[in-house]
Amino acid sequence: METIWPYPEEEPAFEKSGAYTAWIAATDNKVHSGAAWRVQVKGDEMATPVERAKPSDGKSTSQRAILGALVGALETLPPVSTVDVYTNGQYVTDLIDNFNEKRACGWESSDGPLANIDLLKRIEKVRTERQIEWSVHQVTKGKQPHSSIIEHLRRLARSVCRDAS
Image 1 (cartoon, rainbow, N blue to C red):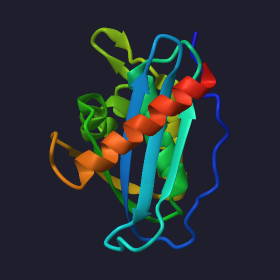
Image 2: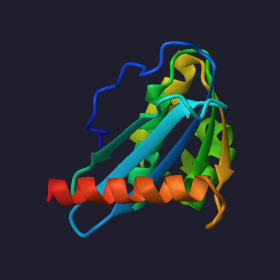
Image 3: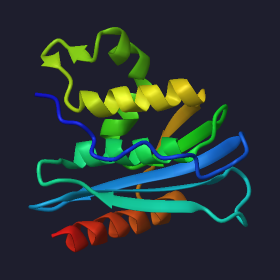
């Protein structure tokens, strides 16, 4: 049975199409997982970023949460935009790098259906409807400022997990 992402689609938080930078992070504990993201206008460090975090239900995993963070970041963007996504998660980096191939295979691998198909379809829907182009960047520990931002988002995700418990 397919799980459905429990959040309604968000309206864009930014008004102007353009280039953006996003950071995503996730965490999980024994009861909940949490997703957090930050998006800002690319190259404008003085602009106020949009930063959000959401808990998920008790059945979620850190992989599901990081995809939820990606959904949240993409939904923040207005139509006809580009985004550089920074994460320290290999799972989402590999997924984005092979997204078109996974979609073309019907969200299946040689082992069967991929996990989190509902989120993969949601990501594709937002990207297609809003005409968003993306690239992903794997952040290694200590690479600043990205590493600090991702660690901050991890703490934010942990706090929404605690609050939801």
